[in-house]
Length: 184
Length: 425
Image 1 (cartoon, rainbow over the protein chains, first blue to last red):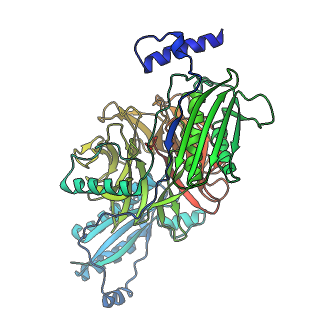
Image 2 (cartoon, rainbow over the protein chains, first blue to last red):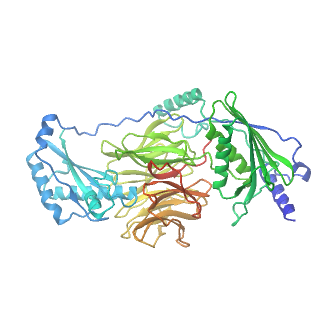
Image 3 (cartoon, rainbow over the protein chains, first blue to last red):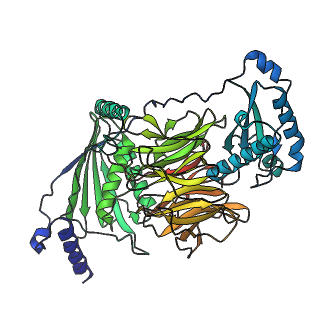
């Protein structure tokens, strides 16, 4: 009985896909010799990628002399609470220092990198890292630095300083990092 | 990944036209992929209805004749079929098989296999098919054969020749975009330039979209899988992260071009930009439902990151998840009824599935941290990443949580898998 039902379903299915007239029982029966099908199987080859070109972003790397000069001025990272992007009071002295450097050295710009710890989704962390960089930028603007001299980039959880699974490590990764660039 | 007519081309700029031409010649020179003949359905009978719960296992025997190496094909075919949970492999000397698949393998000059599938109950041959390859390519051959056996038994297309894209973390901490076969083998590097994160397939399987950071800018690029040529899809100030793609070729993404991270869509030429959300806070990870009518995404507008859905026009916003304070990376099931996502529970990240109306919440993983679920195109499997054995790698399970196995090598650190659609070969 069950088999009959299956056959009926099959007849129905075939009639839907192949033709709109209901086939007779005869047509559903397979031929004695079924037709052999042929399929060519090939493996896809991974090739060298033709990468798209990146346009210039209007920044220049520092000259060797400038790099030497800059080595005297190392800005520490500032840190953030878990899943937060507000500037903590303990970050203010460093931000004051960055602002006074920029005030005195008009030839330099700064890039603020926002980073997160490894926990959570990459995409959400990228957005969070961007907010950290932007709130840092806004703070520097409030100290009188022109917004055109500050750019931001997020690296989310992609560039950890530390890879242990501990709060100390996570805290060091939740940071804004300052990179000094030349002004064009 | 074979070029299908002029889909996705022809309407573009002069540059695109040029690319299409060279793509065609490259594809011709390399003779990539397959010509196909459709399986005749005239004598089809469904042996197992996989949509009915608790379907029985079908006893199947596979017999291989040919050189010693042809056993490898048999092993791969068996392992593909067994992974589905609906086959019971029966040794040739044990009676009871309802289906016998005979693989007649010839490796003299290329690789030729004649597959014959016999229905032992009705004592008749139900499929006879010859597979030709110019080289000894065991794996693609075996997966193609497994697809045909699966199709005969279930009436559905198997996923054994689909791909999974993912990120591999190198010793330097840098991640490169790769793809591999559905079983974790045959991994190939795709993109290694810059810092690459999110990635996703076009629904026709012809393109891979991804976000890369190069020169401190996050842009969305796509790779034409016919010619491995990269193009820029979208760039702006701020952060641009690609999400999912729609059946009619739109790409959803998040961008902070106007300040806060919002959800946008563009067409495949990067044009016709539409802004779908306007909320203070972070909106990321948009993915289209299979019918393209609904978008699921992550927003922290309610204070914590949660899954929301809205129409593909940005209307009728509804929150889907309420359990827990961190729910991200949504993925639609193939029927559009449920959403898999990553949620934090007891300090660990786990894979959950919930109906899109927020009901019937189920947790699919328990051990370690498990993230980034992605469904197979037939909805039968999920891939995700997990650190349950210490090193993060790609795992596969059935979509009800059964049969969780690691498919990437133990020495590889791998994450964020995205399952391809069916690929045209």
